[in-house]
Length: 543
Image 1 (cartoon, rainbow, N blue to C red):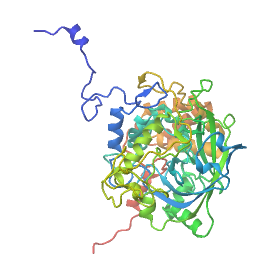
Image 2 (cartoon, rainbow, N blue to C red; image 1 turned 60 degrees about the horizontal axis):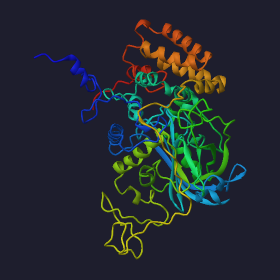
Image 3 (cartoon, one colour; image 1 turned 60 degrees about the vertical axis):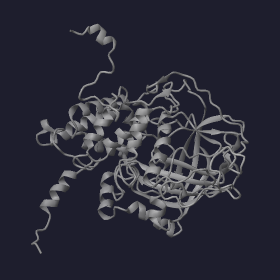
Image 4 (cartoon, rainbow, N blue to C red; image 1 turned 135 degrees about the vertical axis):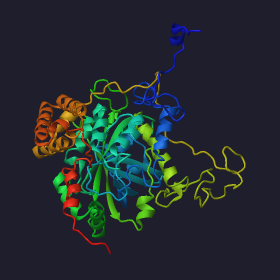
């Protein structure tokens, strides 16, 4: 008996074929671009099953090395508060204790890192640098987890595993491939601003001491009355900022692939303590429709002429780790680690990171990673948590009835703390949707960044992009040139001219972009290095 086509369409579920993306339950994925949020700005909801399955599996891809930020260096120090934000008392905006008193010092541990490559990769790679600070405050730990660059490639956490997969080595060849990088970026236009920065000299900081830091995401400060403002965090090095060209980086790497770790260690040993000043930008909480960008979009900068940088304190690193593994390797950060007076915004990347970071640490280091000395708060800790891998003490309070590991109880168990400051209770209203932020101009700020570069930085950017894009298929080149055209006329023209000139100089130019030619991002003569190893290698007899 024939089926009624109209009836079949009436009961049609999601259409899939052999090439359709699904989750591990076999459910077709109809939206792999956006997590589910209240309205398109957020916040996110806990029932984001597709996202949680995707990111929690990603968190467990490698054992035991970090998935990202594997190569790192770290140091101990202190943060000293100014007691003010600009010329105003900091208490106007936040009740966080570490900021309130002028001269108040809070111990810190900082970990710097590269992002994409492994534990023993060179420190001269073209890559963002991690800049994570753990504050051991009197109210418990606060982790400010960011990068040296102030924006990011993507604005929705759903895309994070895809982004890292595209940037990391090919799963077949185990070689980083610029075609994979640009395939993702060309098809994800929100990456273009970050691409502009990463392919410029800002993509290779000279070392860890002479680079900026940023919280990247938008956070909130909450004052004693429960009123909140949006904030962005920025670290500015007192040592100045220095970046490298490709040629300079290659020359350094040929001599020392640990140069940044060595530089940090030796500077502290000789008493030349690195120092950064912490600035914040402040914006009233809300969607700000008057702006041409969404303040929750981490691919965007907040213009400092509209939202000035306000100093709130300084950080000094004055002690090297006693054991690299115990401290630098086992230190564990999470964007959800906030203290009273600090809060989350609805930034969709921040909300995704807040699940992912701590989930990764529980997997990588273990369920009791917070009992390790480098991660433990420098104050009393009392919980009802039990068991788990490598647990070696119980978080109990003096006088606590050890038979009671639950709350509430009237038999000597732990009690809730009394809240002093008024709770911040933002109103959330909207449909649950999977949509991108509405104000998503992907090229305007990239053009502004390009025009702010010095001439040598522009030259380096174009040269680096050309060297990698010339190896990509034409459709990827066309998409990247279109984004450059939108960003700035000169940017687009120079990229187009550079690609045309490079193509002419290549043999079999009609085939360029098709041949197998993977190499690290921005490496000028990667193929030549492979050939040189054969041609210049010295023959030897077996022994």
